[in-house]
Amino acid sequence: MDLHDAKWRKSSQSNSGGYCVEVAVTPAVVGVRDTKDRAAGYFTTDHVRWNEFLTAVKSGRYSR
Image (tube, rainbow, N blue to C red):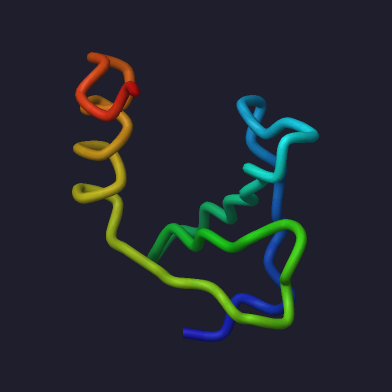
């Protein structure tokens, strides 16, 4: 899936410490890419997996 023309938005959790990601939500998939290295490409996932990931993050599963 080509997301080069998609509307990307920077995560509200991105910071100046180097942890910057952008997300593009389309009807078919969700794309994620590194804000500082957009040329490296992006990965996509389906909406079910993306929502599972967001739920896990919000629950603290991936906290340091």
